[in-house]
Length: 209
Image 1 (spheres, rainbow, N blue to C red):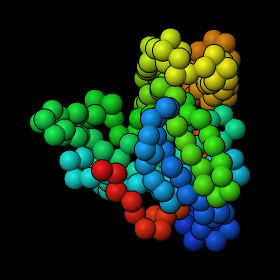
Image 2 (cartoon, rainbow, N blue to C red):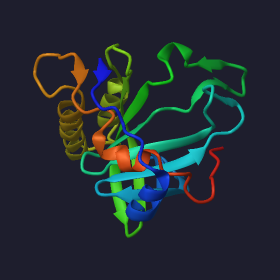
Image 3 (cartoon, rainbow, N blue to C red):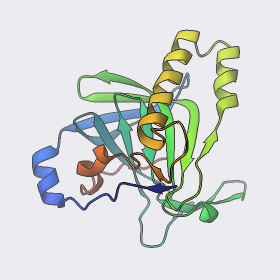
Image 4 (tube, rainbow, N blue to C red):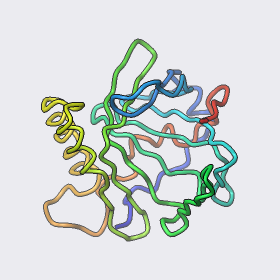
């Protein structure tokens, strides 16, 4: 599938001057503490963008840095990023190589959203989808972890049903609007992120450890 959105370049100065609403972000997995943050971010309409820097065991794609920018659709509770890194060496020497995925592949995560004034808390809710932009199909991941969380009681039925409804709305709005598969993604990457895509780096960088 190929994305129908060619994300236009927004002049950085224009976007920064007219759209910037600074926010702080904390992120983590469902039911786990501590959270990572605070991270610098910006909100525009119903989208938050935030970023952090990856450490040296990660190798960036050619022409990119280790600064990772993530976007969150607040109304759906869906987080997504085009990972900046191609290779990662773990402490035990294991190498994770993302080269077969391609540099234009996006990772999408189902999350919960909490807001406390200018601070947002995003918690991962297990389910992911990998979305290539070169004509390949998407790949859904970690439905088993979602089911395990319901089984062990860490995710309530109410939380699970809300999450699944939001996830289906994301799939319908942004990947397949019609019942039958079509040639292009419906709206991915979402047009709503355009004003935040080309902003310069946010404030002081925070490194993920």
